[in-house]
Picture 1 (tube, rainbow, N blue to C red):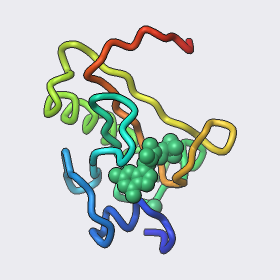
Picture 2: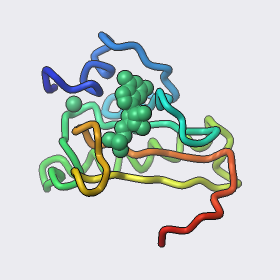
Picture 3: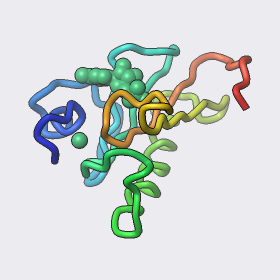
Picture 4: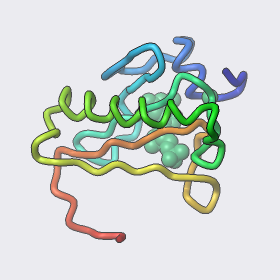
Length: 115
Ligand code: 5GP
Ligand code: ZN
């Protein structure tokens, strides 16, 4: 846990969130400013600053986050139609909350292609 991290506060429950999925290692909750009809954040309960802070000791959280993404997609009924997952990393990647998180976006057809 990091004292001044918004997502650590959400994980400990001192900042409320609309939970979508939770297990021992992962919390998923609705983004406060949704960018799509479905916009859920998937967050490891361990404070990992970004993808750049993933290492052999904490990489299991990445696998667990990916399994949680599937649970979120099913709960939101976007698993069959499909969805988009985004991870912003660092300043140039547009990351604003320095706690690793996956944006799960869906409920619409994404026509614009970045890659
Ligand atoms: P980033 O820009 O770091 O990739 O994504 C951070 C995301 O966290 C943004 O989409 C923003 O709307 C969301 N966010 C920031 N503060 C809060 C909060 O207090 N509660 C929730 N539910 N989402 C938040
Ligand atoms: Zn944190």
